[in-house]
Length: 276
Image (cartoon, rainbow, N blue to C red):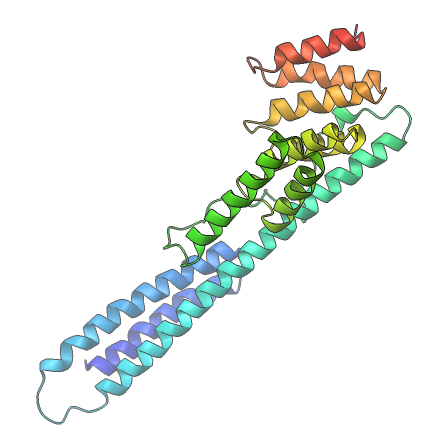
């Protein structure tokens, strides 16, 4: 079989395999995986075409087929990049939307007599399903601008931390809020919310501080800062005069996170509030 025919047959088979799957409901990760498979197939065909250079005589059309392979390869790369961009945007919207719903639930609970904030539970993921993954579904080379974005993200977070450490609570609160708007769902998002709560409490805005702690806990209810966020939420509720809700929340720290360093702080806060 000639190289041109082998290319056409190979690529047709690849499309035939992909077509039934595309007809079903797929995630962006599934589509991206198929693009990677197709790209691998194109690379293999391209290498096969390049071996025809040793054939002498009037063989024509090989260069044209190779050009078409290059065009298809570029298109696959473009589609893969576009899929990754859409996946990131969708995950950001889902994460931000879920957090906003959780904040609204907290605010409504504040307005309803007898509402138990600690019993609200985890906010369902916006649109249903599982929470967006924080890692890609398939191994891939990082985009050229990833290191720069990571460096800028770390620099922005450090700047906000310095403002908090220096006692510039207004600047710290604003910078942590801007940080999570700029990098929604990032690896430092939970800590940024906790520190924003600390800055707001430094300003004397205990209510908004409590909301920040709730947002941090909702973002990662089992994460490394979850116990601290829950403890600070309970303590803030106590300072707001919501004794019953504060006692329930503080008691949950030891139940949910046995052995956490903040358990003694939570117990001390319960004694100060007068929890039974």
